[in-house]
Picture 1 (cartoon, rainbow, N blue to C red):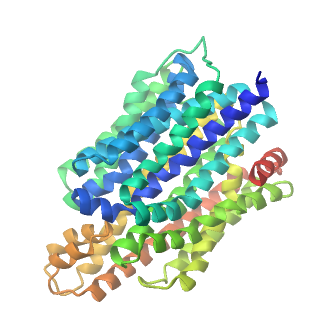
Picture 2 (cartoon, one colour; picture 1 turned 90 degrees about the vertical axis):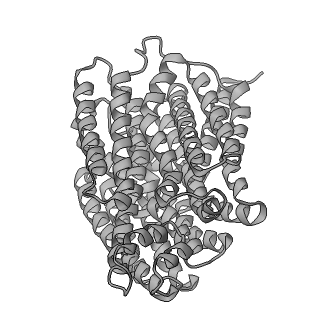
Length: 507
């Protein structure tokens, strides 16, 4: 007969597996995007939705999924979410076209949100105190392992079994988690839960959707297009409506009063920082390496492991340093190191060999690894104990939604910068914008077809100059974030978070 501690450990294992599979759901498609384009076709905007559809639906519904889990059963929602992720993985390999593929990606994001929200809510019920912080640190570590190994695993799968195997891998992990959780996880719910905050959910989802839609459509239609302006204005309107609703309802999806805690605000800023300093590179660099430079998927995976590999070890260093230094100091230093790596990488033109690129990539990964080792523990420790669940939900929503928004903004910015560079070449001015969209999705042949007077070397040079400028901008934003995070999180050392993060990282 199993003991209560066995049930806890099996539940933790299942949730960690779910967290492990989620990064594969957005790093994997980036590695095989050229293969997906060749198989299913699609415009640059449709190809951008391959990643953004997942991240949008995941980030927009995470808090709502947590509310449903509290009201209708955490085990039920967790298992249902895992099943949807597994089903979506199979459907992706059968999609008849890129539009259907993007819709299934959105479905996969919904399943991931349900599994992650319900799983973390269940953990918050069975673990308490330092054990709870330790459990959440395990989740952060699992997520980091998925990010670290996702690209190289996807590269190996793509070369060995085709792009379809990359789409199946998150579903396979979800099935294992489902088999673990189904017999061992106990059902739990909140008898006083008020159910889903429908107005809040609708306005929050609408705001994120319209913002992403407007940003992704801008390179194709132009920032002055009525459709783009309308989408962005609608996003602002829905965002304002969401805040107004959450201020008035008795049981809000987002407890705005938590933002009265300065350290809580600092943690949210910290959650968003990896989005534009690290996560966007997990999507943009494979497109560059494979689609533009012609490297193999496996070779691109090796490059990406240099970027993400430090996430496996550096968080342990951060956890040990937390006994002596404040979270603000550790996080700020890490972000400054990341910014230095971004600046260094900006000098690496397309075609730069691995031995020359490995050092800036390692620097970026190591810099992000320092705050990464503290974030999940900080998320539940900077607010009163009874509000830890809500704080964790907000933290993960900011992290995932921030990644989706950052990817859309950075992608649009890169397209604009490439178009600016191409406009200086001896080619038809009207073709620059269309060619830039093709370049940023890795479609080099179509870009060259749109620019008959431009050769491959000139096109890659233009892309390299634009990419370097983008990295300098991202480095500047990262430095600014480091300064703000230091101000909000400076002060006493965070010994408890350091201790539990150290233990989970060692495991």
